[in-house]
Amino acid sequence: MSSANANVLTLDDFDLEGKTVFVRADMNSSIDPRTGKIMDNSRIAEAAVTLRDLARSKVVVASHQGRVGGHDYVSLEQHARILEEYLGRPVKFVDDVMGRAALQEIRSLSDGEVLVLDNLRFAAEENFEFTIDEAMRTHFVRRLSSVIDFCVLDAFPTAHRAHPSIVGFAKVKPTMAGRLVMKELKSLRKIQSVMKAPFVTVLGGAKVRDRLEAMEALIQGGKADKILLTGLIALVFLKAVGKIKGKLNLQNEEQMVEKARTIYQKYDEKFELPEDLAVERNGERVELPVSSIEDPTQVRDIGSATVRRYVRLIKSAGTVFVSGPPGVFEDDRFSYGTYEILQATASSLGITIVSGGHLNAALQKLGVKDWIDYVSTAGGALVMYLAGKKMPMFEALAVSYETWSNVAKGRGGA
Ligand code: 3PG
Image 1 (cartoon, rainbow, N blue to C red):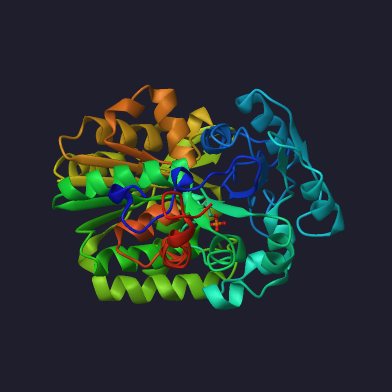
Image 2 (spheres, helix red, strand yellow):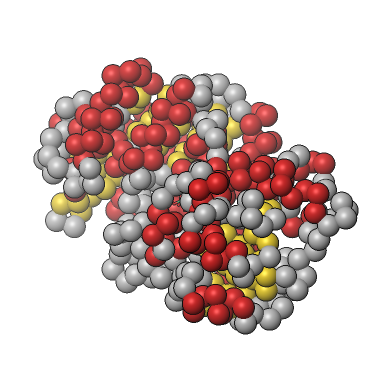
């Protein structure tokens, strides 16, 4: 057992040759709403690292993709094909999660073969959160544990979710951290030892419910002196404070707006809101003051005055944390806000952290990825971790350590 890895078992702690290893990866990727195709392969590329180390095992790869009802709630068949390219060896796919077909495919794996199961969230239980003890009694964990020997948790971006595939195997099968999780933990440990105030967080992206939860956690954890709002979450706050009218076409919109209002009333001095926004008009980018926005669903980016103010705040930060894109940067007309925020972050003298697959792609396009101190594949999970929240995946790894370290290599076990 490597002492540096305190209470986490890793791939080095077991002899996995010839064994059936379930790997919970996170290959959840952005999907083009028009074509249904994957837009960014980075999470699949990262998943391949651990799988390369399991070249002599029978490997079962599992991941979720999107959320029920979303345009990105699709099968993992194309992920399997892309994974095959990164791994350089054949990857099987089964359009099943825990039914007879999946179990049959798993049982018939030979050493060195890799099988990708279909989208975990096609199984109902994977859309709910459980305690470790509840999760081990789910159909998913009971069925899968009848055909696997070990579980590897490598889905760092899903570390904040207590889903059966994340927490359910800890007491049932020796469960260890994958290479990606160890890499992220190492980087986080380093970055946390040098992070300093003032903490400036730029929040964007589309996952409003998560963002609302995260910002409270960051403020309460003393990790947000200023929160610069962009993207959809900015519109929710602008609506909450009465600066824009009109529908955002958001699920549970009233509830979200009400929650934003409560948070704003409690911590208003922490927040910076956009003063201007960019909308699409006759195919062109047009910038408008917030008071002139009639239909908020047409907003695609933050405006130049907002960018200038935010850039000044970023430059004065001790630590800058950017999570979620400020605009629809994939469209050149609306990339300005995202690129300027990332350029300012890259040039900041503070400690810089950028999170989430989307921004990863934007940093690469700008050629400044190496200028950022820590770039993570995780979005919500990273925010929760930095805010000091309990992370179900790490709790599961700690429970597995307590349960299985006596059977780990060097202790007379596996
Ligand atoms: C992410 O992209 O943040 C992770 O894959 C988790 O996805 P989720 O927010 O849909 O649980």
